[in-house]
Length: 237
Image 1 (tube, one colour):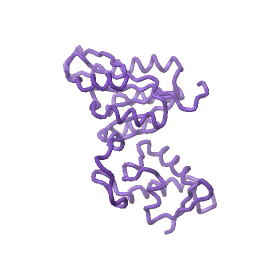
Image 2 (cartoon, helix red, strand yellow):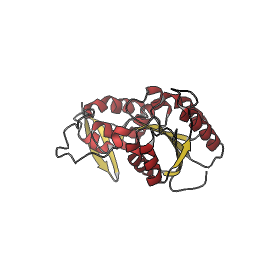
Image 3 (cartoon, rainbow, N blue to C red):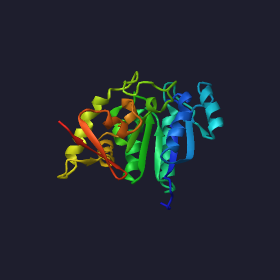
Image 4 (cartoon, rainbow, N blue to C red):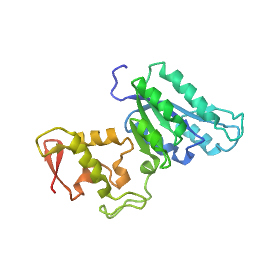
């Protein structure tokens, strides 16, 4: 890959599986970690069912790919997306793929892309199966990237629909166990890397916190300190 400040991603969206109202939030999330250079949306645009997506495609500068269903009940966009993904993969132009779908049918595609040495970022709803989440380098839940209607006044409260921060404690402890060191203080960045490696769908926003530092600082099981620009934590039990 050419030297770039930001990784270049091919974004492939299954419009039959993802509501159009999330399109803007999805692209905004992608631009936070890379450049969505290729933006393709797959579906049967002749059916009229994707009229909301057609508007988003125009507004957000995406490219619509027509996939007509020859059989009732079959998702034609799946096979069209997969074929295009393999063609794009062999161009060697991109640093990774972003697959936007909650459909388990794309599990094999994500696995094939990773075998080629490229990153796969998955974006989908909470209904996405574990098989799809785990095969991605990282899986982002749409529920975590949708803008909240208004800021929360109580930063210690668990927002509706989120998991309590204490649920993240076992993940942090497991990451600590995997890091070989004698010191009781652990680098927060390294903890985050180990958690994500084991849990591609880990996201601090699931626990109502914007950053990992916000999450651990609110947990009574850990103590934190700053060493230069690096935050560290240790168990206090």
